[in-house]
Image 1 (spheres, one colour):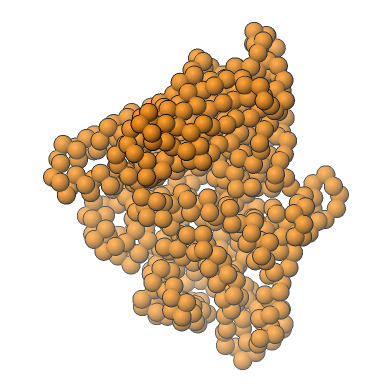
Image 2: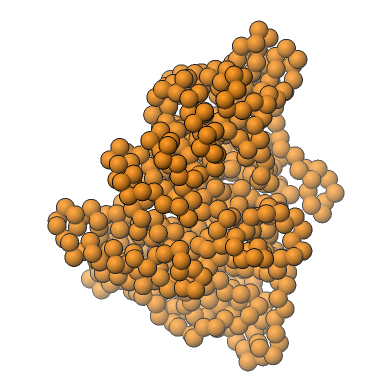
Length: 600
């Protein structure tokens, strides 16, 4: 038995190989850091939109201005922007705030770069330059909604019927400088994590934008620090569930699955997720729980073994390695294990009698299904209890019919009646009480009494978006503020948070091309290799923080009996209606609500 497990574990740790585009060879990962895909630096794809010489003819020197984080500035179009050298931001202590500086030029710039000063309030207090970070906004290929405009699901393998364009999205913090060609635009994303120890008041500082050592412009920034304090992300009550894909990281970086090189490659990526307030670890306990819908499909983190005598054994070495790593990153509140009901009802196992991998096809309600899953879950329960993880683990499914869920729940509780269960799918009152973590699609609603009861029971009640929605969404062509809008909608409906199915299920070359064969561009990922953030991800964090602020204020106003404050919160949330799209842009609704929120 031990030799069989060691053999399977060795296979899981073997190098992932990939045909290297344009090199004509198959390359496997090594510890040298030499990857067939770019990590540190790269050249963007050519822009299908050709710059207009006539339009750019008036540009004799570079221009620099503050822009807005609600706009993706096109690479070869003159930005519709009045030059603005001053900007004012407001934030709570502990909050991450951001701005976007825009550079456009009619001549070449060799080494565009930027730097921050410390920010002072005139009373000897400062926000240090170390509280600031930034990155060059990079351009990636994108597409569009389905032709009927109603969503973005469905096959699009060659993208021939969809418009393709280069769009601003990735935020590249790895480059100290970047060249700019004439007749082009480049934005600089600026973040400030206001220290929790900051003294409330108005702080002033600057951002210098340069070409090498030559100053192109000095941009002024004022930051008004509120007396309120936002907790650190690990203490946020917001239930963020972005599904992670470790297999995509192994493929892109060309390192062996679950090796130390793999763990090292994932570390900054998952730390960035933890800093966004992520609560849930995504674990695959079967082979292809989603039938390989991503470029890098999910393998099982549990090895299933049918012994010669027909009994079952299970090895959890990979599962443990993954969970322990994610917990070390600070993501330690919940483990969602997918899936007892995969989209393809086929379950892979190592057959000891034939010394080979086999599949069994069976479905909920069948005796063979019950036999294998009671064996697995009984073993899994014991293992989770030994590790001290049972209370934070759920047996998770997504988008499964109610009748199938009812049959599956019987099997789960037969194995261990104390298992927690999660579902992302339609609302079913018949099974709602059995679900610890219940996430429904944005177009549906929980009954008010159900939300109240679930809250008192300590259960999670959230919603999700997918390729089914045109608006709001987080495609690479979506309006950036739509990512922020999501959490205001959650706050309005007194929900606990938000789920999106793909944090980093990268397509083949995610730094260059966000398009995918089955969904609209960007549907499969928020962040980029090299632990690069994106406009979408930063705007999502903005909304999460605002949701947390609303939660804190609601609690405070309830305790102090501030009925006027509670009414103001409900008024600022009232415009967040799905029916407003696309006529009312997300940024209009969000920015009005933020102005009110920052006065409370």
